[in-house]
Image: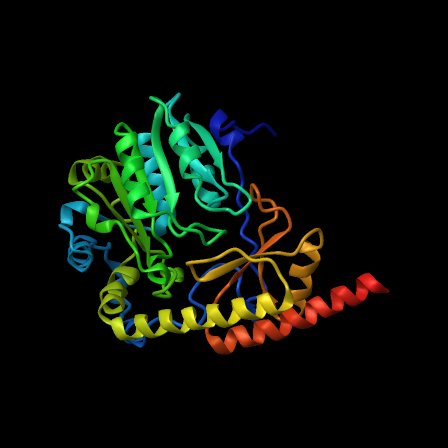
Length: 358
């Protein structure tokens, strides 16, 4: 049987297969909130009726609330189906044939996946062995064809950050390009450029409510940028892509600042403890400003991830990322969870070392 063929670009697209499964394990592989969303969100969920689900979602009132929360105007804000849709929409709006997406690597996989659906060219800028943001290399890579520069701050999988002044200089050096700053892990870093939205004409900031807020299952994020740029992106954005349950829950999550502060504080304390445990084991790690830590395991990275899974802890093998050969990324949860993870890690390493000696 012969089937119709998709576009050439779709045939050439990279595939992304999330390693889902083993849901009962301690999930330290997706950088999610490892505990729960705010109790206030659970209360809202309990009040949603069957009749509420019969109506199309209305995003504008919640967008206005999010804009006020961020100190922006509603015209500068658009809610999206997670940051993934935000990336997809931005690339679909601004990347045309022969344009260039400038991408510091290693970084979030989906930038390249969504760019590959366009006719643009991805120009990768490799970080050095320390995985710090390759600022000078990126500046040197800017050309008249550069139309989008995607920056995750903090970056994944490294946890590294870029300074505010460097972001501003990149935006100045590439006035014809949209500079996307993806602040998915902002709450664990505490520094932002969202206050520059509207002041810097080519700056767009993305945030997610999947990480610190614990709403990954509801799929909701936000794009913030100058009203003139947002006007074009709204043309590409589906009017109903954010579901009504997410829209109902988000205001409650935003209002419960005490829960957010508690969870972020717990993660930061756990990260410090976990990094100390890694240092005690002599494991190489990269400094992180996010809710995860990248470590170097070496040639046995796949075995390490499997043994950790067998011990009830899921970690993410990132060895295939550019410059990350032999590396594994571990999400940081609560202190209690990470103490369990340290126990599993120590036992796994002891077994692997014992196996190597036998």
